[in-house]
Image 1 (cartoon, rainbow, N blue to C red):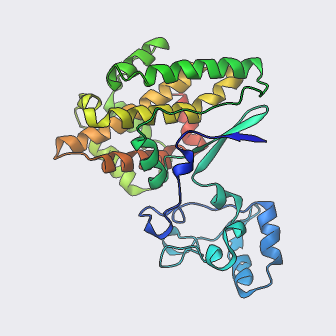
Image 2 (cartoon, rainbow, N blue to C red; image 1 turned 120 degrees about the horizontal axis):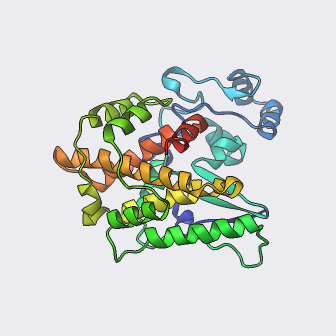
Length: 304
């Protein structure tokens, strides 16, 4: 199948042991059928240990203390890669932090914000997001409509003659929405979701009584990061509208996500300052908590 990627995609390289939020910690790691067959055929001491570290009807690694993958070494490197090479990884480890949107004759592959290096690349990209769908690809009528609508949304969000706040408000009006949410209600909504990290709970608890004024969206330093953040959410989530035509729900999710991350960033601005690195970490945390739970996505998509 033909694969297309965003303009910044090939800048990504896993930081491995330099990563401070290791993706081998805290995640259940399912093993695909082909990789399971390879592990079953691996006639080495490591192969024996791998098989002993797998359980379940859907095979997955048994996490060790601290929810660590059993093959994550103390130096932050993967023992399986070190001994067998990257080709020995299961699909989920090979793909992460990438995601794919599948269409009738091609797939779009992007980088997920849940990875700190991917988030840094996405939010710091000075060039406007772009992805080129080849002209000779056959699109269904629904896909043609989707890509036309998506390009219009990108055009609004990438209009750098306006502040990002004005762009968010303009996009909201296009879909009968308002770029304004109750922080208290938002926090209660997100606190009702499945949560992985107690630090995320702490962020939401602190925010509940905060008087968010939206000043962060006027800050010149954060115009491009919020533009790229919003475009990322559109790129990742709008595609499902091809099935039901419900673009407003996906746009609301995009705006609500940016609003909450903006509020978290402004909280730090109010108590001493917020850096690009902090904004990136808040976006990473949001993605980890929200985008990798279909139940959480379903709840938020229904919160319009």
